[in-house]
Image 1 (cartoon, rainbow, N blue to C red):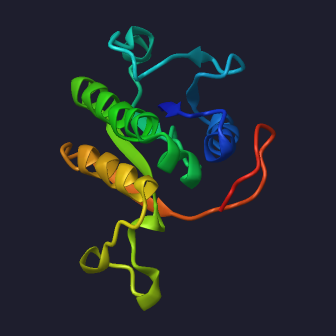
Image 2 (cartoon, one colour):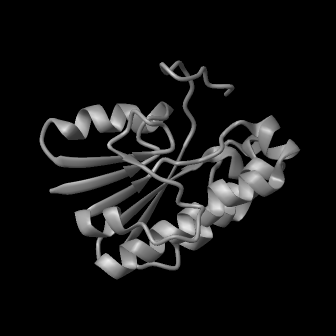
Length: 161
C-alpha cells in the first residue's frame, strides 16, 4: 500500500509516518527539508511527484494549529488549513484514492459534553479554518474526517493545546 502523509514531519504526521513506514511505501510531504517530498501545496503548481507516486491513501496532517497565530494571520490559516486540503482532495479525486482529513474538536461547543453536528460552534479563526477544510473533504465521497484533540511534544515544537 502507498500512503502519502501531508505534514509528515509535524506533530501528528511524524508519528503516523513512523508507524506506517514499517509495512507500507510512505511518501512524507512537508515544507521541512527533512522530508522525502518537500512541497508547497498552497502554490499553484500541480504536485506532479505526488501524482506520480499514486498513493492509495492521502492523509492530511498539514495544518496551522497555533490558535493565536490563526487569529493574527487569518490569511495564512486559510491558505494552510483550507486551500491545502482543497488541493489534496483534488489530487485524491484525480487518483481515485482514499482521503483522510485530520481536523479538530475545536469546532464543538464543549460546554455540553455532547459532540455532535448539532452543536458545532466556531469560536475562533482556527476552528473556522478547520471547518472550511472539513467542507472541502466532504466534497469527495472517499474521504474520512477525524476530529481529535492531542497535545505533547515533537522534535520540532511543543503543542499549545
